[in-house]
Image 1 (cartoon, helix red, strand yellow):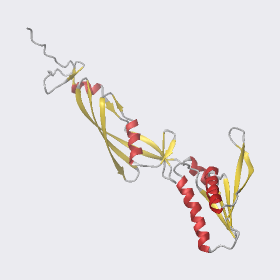
Image 2 (image 1 turned 90 degrees about the vertical axis):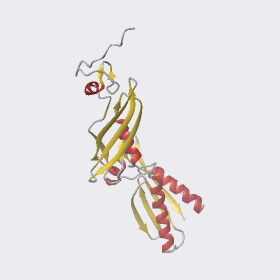
Image 3 (image 1 turned 120 degrees about the vertical axis):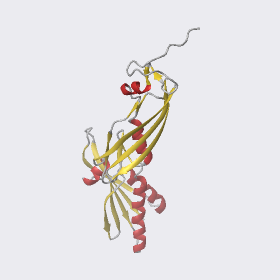
Image 4 (image 1 turned 90 degrees about the horizontal axis):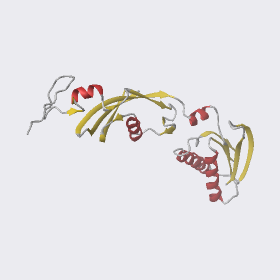
Length: 239
C-alpha cells in the first residue's frame, strides 16, 4: 500500500501536520491571509437623538439598550463559519462611542476556528421625527379638561399628573405622545398633545371615570404630503 502524499503549502512551503491544518490546499495561516472568513467594519455610525436619547435602527427609533446595540453589531458581521456562536462585550469610550469586542466560534471545512474582532459604534446626532415635531410646536389634539365645581388645588394637581403620566406611558408605542404645552385656566386645563391617538385614549378614560359624555370637534390645519387636509381635534371633558 502506498503512503499518503505529504502536502505542502504552495504559498509558504510549510508541511501539513497535526498542529498545522490545511484548508483548500493552503495552510490555515496563509488561507486566512486571503480569506478572513469573519470580519466587521471598523466603525458603524448610529443616528442618535440628543433629546430623547433614542437611536435609529433599520428606519425605526428605538430606546437604547445593550440588546439593541448587540443586534447592530451582529447585523454588521460577515461570516462564512458553520454554526457560529457569538460573544459580545460592550465598552463605552468617554461617553462618545462604544467599543465592541466580538468572539466568534465556528467551523470551516471541518476545522474548528475562533475569531476575535473589534468595532466602534459611533453616535451621529440627529433629531428623531417626534423630537423634531415637538421642537417645531407640532400638535395634533387639544384635550380640554373642565371642572364643574370648585376643585381643591390638590385634586387639580392630581388630574394634571394623571394626564402627563398617561402620556409618558404611551411613549413606548407612540413617539408623538408628548405634551407640547399646558394652559391652566380657572376651571380646568388645556393640554396640547402631539398625538391625536394618545389624546383620544386619555379622553375616553376620563369619560368612563366621570361618566360625562365627551365633546369632539376639529379644525382644518393645512394640507399633508398626500394633498389631504390635516385636522386638529379637540376633546372636551367635563369632570
